Length: 47
Image (cartoon, rainbow, N blue to C red; front, side):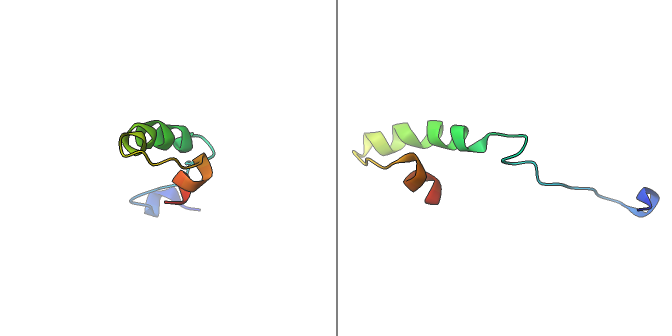
């Protein structure tokens, strides 16, 4: 690959380098709790 021809380089690191699930769960749990919504972690991540 000739990088001199590239203007932008992007790659997906979520789930590999960044644990995004913990952050989402930490943010949504208090909101759901305020509204007395009880969901499993898997259910929250499927929203």
